[in-house]
Image (cartoon, rainbow, N blue to C red; front, side, top):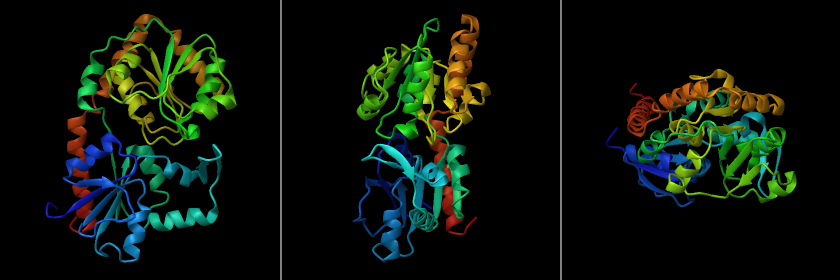
Length: 334
């Protein structure tokens, strides 16, 4: 498939997705309604409907192929019939007509790649074409630094990293309810655009919001090293690379059963995957902090070991294989 010209059209421009595109020698540009016509394959991050519509109207080549990478809450919201209203900062029902239009455009795709099994399971309920799953990774240099961290496991500090304003998908509203229940534990939330949520929920003495921090920076490394437990109570997070980053630092993680990272956590401690029940989640946090130091160190080492599977070189090599296998299926050669 080396003779095929590939254009990667990004929406969020996530560094991991960009590296996926680079691994298959794609040209990279922002998503737009004015897409160059000279490409054989359009590889999209999120807003796949734009090239699909352009192809329907002949504004890109009819024979071109469109492959979308799903690594956001779109599939979860489709699957649950929900939509996050950014302007009103609330979740509402997805209209039946819009849902059918979304599914119709989704099934115009020639292929789909999902990040993790959680996304793939949801996709299979709505898409009937060729599809594959891939694993994400922690960036190589950052992971090397994180693997050297020696966490101070005797303290009681919980960390979550994730930006708003969609607090529902990130589960930040639920996290604040858990923090209120665990009043003797300190919580740090790294990420911006939560002003409305803070106003709605009120400030808690044991919760500190510190705004956005640059990914993979020394500052982020320091923040991770200062905590003893990571949590992610998301609703529809495709995976959550921040979970893997904390694991690389030897910090155990508790996640919701609606977060893709649960597949990594289940390899270590299935009980650290919890339903979105405030009492159960709070109890699990307290149980972890009540462990003796020896057992915490055992868990820390297990989490760090599993994190090494999510290695950049390994996963980029696998992505390239998966992408080429998908192309083989799309072009009818396998």
